[in-house]
Each structure stands twice: as C-alpha cells, then as structure tokens.
Image (cartoon, rainbow, N blue to C red; front, side, top):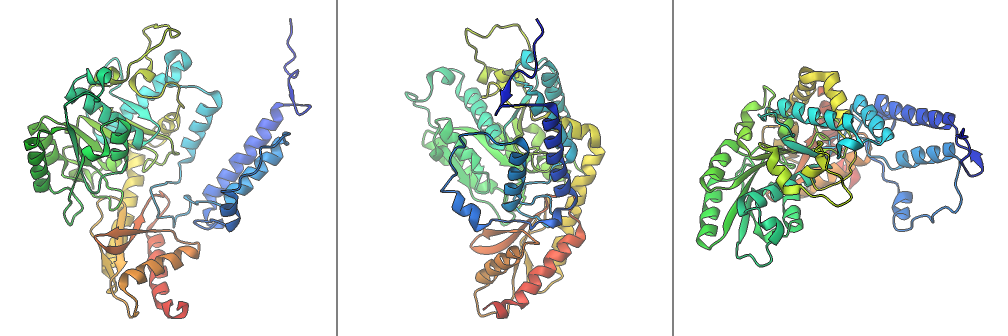
Length: 489
C-alpha cells in the first residue's frame, strides 16, 4: 500500500521540505554574518527588556506559528541579548568563536540524531567518536595503549569529566565494593587534595558523589598561583595522623583565573608516595600540553591516572563537549557498567557503559571534522598565535609606567591592573570603574579578577581571530578611560 508522505499536517498545512531548506539557510546566513562581521554587534548586550522578561515568562502558545516567523523571532531575540564571542575584542571567560566546520559537523550529527552511546544507535558515530578521542590524546601527548575499548569517554563538559574521574578514584582506591555498599556505614574518611586555584567543579562533584565537600583540602598557592608543595605535604601528613585516607590528588593544568599550571611532575610523585589517584584537571589548558612554546609547563601530565579536557574551550568547537582520559579504559568500564532486562547484550561497543549518561548527543563529529580540516599543524598555529598575542599584551603592559602586570602568561591569559593613578580614589576602585566604563561602550569585553585582595583586569584570548592590534586597542581604551575619569566624576 502506498503511503502519502504529506498526509500528516500541522496547523492545517503540509510541512514541505522547502520550509526546512529555506529556514535552515536563513539560520546559516545569520551565523555567517555573525562570524564574518562580528563588529556589527556590541561585544555584550544585555537590554532591560530581557531582564524584565526573565522573571515574567511568556505564556505557552495555544496555537502554532509559521516556521519562518518563528526563526525570525528567534534570531531577533538572540541578537538582542547577545554575548558576541565572535568579536575579536571579546576577552571574557573561555567561550570561543566556534570553527565553522565544527558547527556544520554538530548540525549533521544533531539533524540525523545519531548517538555514540550504543553501537546499534549509531555504528559510524561510535567509530568516529572513538577515533576522535584517540586523536585528541595524541594532540595533547597523553600516551595510551590502543585496546578493544577507548581509554576515555566524551562527556557534556569538564564538570562531568571531573566528576567521572573522582568516581574512578573513589572506586579504585577505596575498593570496588564501595560501588555497591556506598559510604553510609563506612569508617573510611577519604580526603582529596587540590590547590586553592582549582576549579569549583571538583567540590561540586565530591558533594554529588556523596564524599562531601569538606573532604576536599584546598592547598595554598605561591605567588605564581601554583600549588605550594610544602603545604601539600604538611596537610597530607596531618590528615594521615588523624586517620584520614588520602585518595586523590588533583593537579590543575590551566587555572581559570590566571592560566597557571601546577608542577605536575612533582604532584605525580606525591600521589605515588601516598598511593593516591593522580588526576589532572586540564579542562582549559591541556590543549597546550604538546605545543613547543608551552610543553615544558606540562611535564608530568602523562603520568596522570586520568586527565580532563574541554575541547569546547581552546579547540574552538561549540559548548557541550568535554572528555576524560585514563590509562586503562577497562577500569572506567567497571565504574559505570550497568544494564537492564530490556537491553539485549550483543557484545557490541556500547560507550554508554563507560559513563553516567545513557543516550547522549553526538558532539564529537564537529571536532573530528575540525581535526580533519586543520590537522595538528593547523591547530597548533591557531594556539601559538594566541600565545604570541598574550605575550605581546604582557609586554605592552610592562612598557606603560601606569600599568602593572600580575605575572608572565603561561597560557593565553594576561592579568594586569592600573598601578598608578592621579585620581583620589583607591586604586581598586579606579580599576573597577575603568573596567565597567570600557565594557559599557560595547567594543571591548574583559573581566575583573580579585587576586590576593587586589583588583586586576583579566584578559583571556579566546578568539582565534584576535591579533596584536586588537590588544593594542584594548590598552589604548583602558588608558583613555583613565584619563577621562575626571569627566565621569
């Protein structure tokens, strides 16, 4: 019997293919305009109208609207309250302009609704995901043996990767019986160690896992924002004397504040000495681990039992993709393997058995296509350019007597402040005020860092199109605003 493909209708009209193509092209065109003419929009727009709408959402529509009108409204609304990460003067949090090819890859994966969670739900997706994970480990120089299952898993982001790593540490160091018995009746008092500059996702994950936030020991850092090894040793010894069980040491490879990298080789030895799991949170900085200019800062990362990486940062792909590497994928499988009576075991590569989610989005196709397009050398060129821009900015800061550099950049993050001012206002107030006024003009966006009770500007180079003349413009805008403070007051 022949089936009429136009039998099903919505709103009394046939849904025809031309609508999809026409409106899909409209969306692609808006993206192209945003990428190629980013300075047509402010770096950040946050209108009062949207702020008022936030606590007063519109009612659910009773009847549907025309697809073209919906697309038009969506585009208009988004650009009315828009964080313009495509702008070369966006220096905020690590929210990069995505490579266009990665966006196309994500569109293809989402449109076909393939998932790498189970082989039967996406055989090609599963193969490509495992291949992308291997390429990523090669890119950062994290050596792994290729086996029947991947030595890692893609996640929704760095937070879930860190949580998965801490579960792996718990299960491995405390014993796998904890997976069934939990810690409710346990006399074990596990402790985890990390610098004060480590990411907040670690203590959120400890809470999530039932280990509790107070099991985390946040160790002081030195002036270079790296963990103080003497303080770490002292804390471990104190805890052991009180009957605590150190289970995990977290090294940070690229702090969110300054981009500093802990002494990973020394931390690897400490973890070994005390029989702890050594996890490296390299969510932001790990992509620089195998780049000539920064390789020396990451010595010891290859000794880690697990490593978190966020491709959606400095690999310039859309949000929603993080990953966890480990030396032995079979241990990851032991920590997450589960099934049900409705699932027929066909001995296929089912990656949902290696992480918390079951069915999940296929977010690695865009990265796979980007690697195909750029290769190691192309990606390295983009990263090295951002490093050179950050170093140029640091040098420009040092050449101005009124500016003060916090530290030489390790990654493309540069922190500095106005160190001298003729204003009667306190220097911290001057720095806050200048940042606020420059950002309000809409052509530059950078953030404030509270560092050891002093206010600094934090400039993160996220956009692969940002160049030296852009940071020169930023310096000029800051100094010009300092001179205009008298007029403001």
